[in-house]
Image (spheres, rainbow, N blue to C red):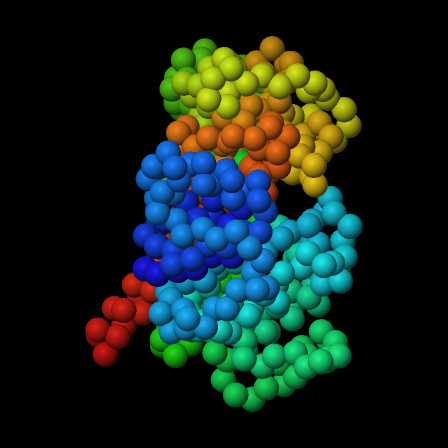
Length: 385
């Protein structure tokens, strides 16, 4: 399946989509450091990555017309800073807002599907009007905004348009942990399927669950056996889990999903930082209000990245003895689903910035397979007709 990708970063989205069966015709990323990281790994001949057609540049300067009518998917993660809870909350007034460029790529290529990822902050009431404009414009990507026209006026025109929408558009709030990533990373997925294909989008089904993890930990004890740990007393159970575990124990109804992947699961076999292959100890981790680190036996808190690397005391793990330390680059890469052969050649701060901005490849593979399944459904329906 053919695709293009905007805002590729260090490759988390692209890797998952590649694993899901998409082959990029073009990838665009403006950040020189992120491009350097990808090119470094391309030269090392890594699977999928070695064949990526990555271009460093500004998406505003890219002409998408040569790809018109040829693509199964347009994908990307428009910069999230304008909508991030930790940002300045300027939304569409932020110069980094690139949603109009994502929509332009759809307009100029008419892909069968599109898939965009962003922080859940864009779904907050503060930005409800803008998300509404984004989805309305993606339904009618050819109805462009006039000079000096406000988003509100443009949205009114879009929603008043009587012609059938070109795309069926769905906005889905997801937790990456529900799709196999060892992170509680909440994101918004904006997906679309061209309506002339004769099908409608169906929602992506989660593959992993918190309930199944708690079942394996506190009902069967399988989780602790797998890690060679003597089953801890239930007094160590997080208070937030007690009601769920109680219901599971009473009903003995085994959840059918796979268990959430924990930090301990993700880092199995890696060992403590040894100074090799990005697995280097980074000093300075400490606990303070709002920054308490990630327990080993749950999915990690979302990796974060500020403008200059790691903000505050985030991106820490809580060890079995109660102490904390920063995740190494290699550990963070595992949390994002990147293989141990994927190297980050820059500093810890710059590498963590790239990782904090990446889409977990476990999530992108899951939603990539979801989009592929929608395309397969279209093909089957056409064959049946």
